[in-house]
Amino acid sequence: MNYTTLAKVRAALGAETVTDDTLLQVKITEASRAIDRLCSAPDNYFMAESVTGELCNGLIAADGVIIAFLKKAIVNSVSSFEYRKSPKDAWIKVDADALVILNKHQVAIYGEAVHQGKCFTRVSYNGGYGTEAGTPSVITGLSEDIINAATVLTVRFYKEEKTGLTDAIGVAELGTMQYTKAMPTRVVEMMNPYKRII
Image 1: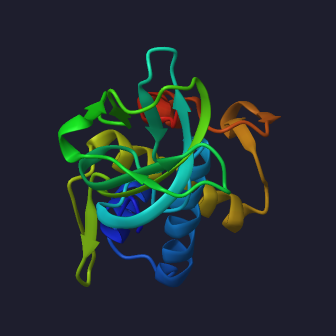
Image 2: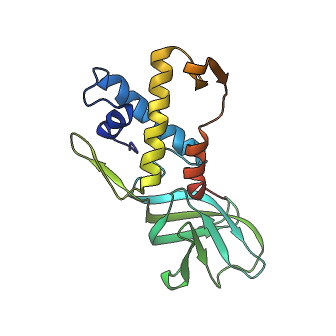
């Protein structure tokens, strides 16, 4: 899923028609995947979808609560949860009444485990924020922060491609150019609340 649209990128570039639509589409996808990486997440981190049998690490707290760290930006609902202490063990299915979604990011199971430590989880759930559909594409469900960050990053990637300068910032009129490998500060700040924490 792309996190911005061609129309938004064109508007940010200040042009209604751009002959480089194919290049812009490539840069939109690159920027969207870069945002996934910035959030320490897999591809399509923000895309709303149903996930079946996702394998991920879990943690059994001292009080026996099992916490699973799923791979979507938010968890909307959980349909199935299983865990095991070791790959040799059989999967233990958890009753849905014991499930709680914490902070929209993690799933906790109460009253199941008796031993503290790491575990493996297998979870089926619905997670993510938005979808992309249609031609031209229409994005629904994503916050403006995510869309704006993807737009800013797409414009940067496009300008780098067209000028031949990579990671250049500064004011050309003043003759000051600085080179940096950093992600734009504005993008980092907009994505901070969405970073995957495990």
